[in-house]
Image (cartoon, rainbow, N blue to C red; front, side, top):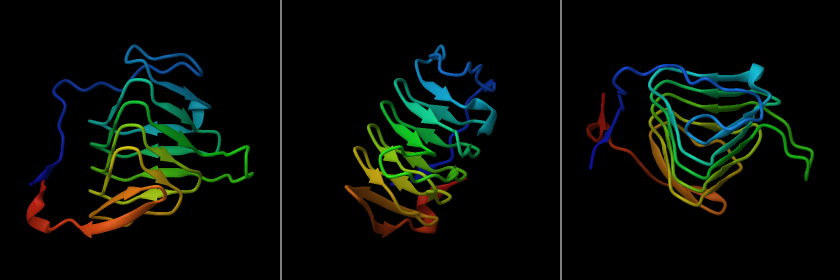
Length: 141
């Protein structure tokens, strides 16, 4: 099963106001430290806290109802979150501060990601663990 790079026809950078829902019903705070690259898509009801920085690379897909935290008030962790090119985050997943998701990697739905995930893997669970590598022929560019 190939994991294609997604190209969105007529993609435009989303209009985001700090703390207010976008027209696609996702919310971001501290938007001055949020970057979203071309062809990326963020699902409805996702929350992004970019206080320590969040970088969303080209052709990234974030499912609905996800949470991306660059700061955690519970344990005091803080760090930039990086979602590298063509990665995919399944619905209802949580990405914690300081985490990088590798290029082409896929995070399964309902995952809790508290450690870096390398390039070209499938990971899921609570906490998320690498399940297998993605074969080169499964990646369509």
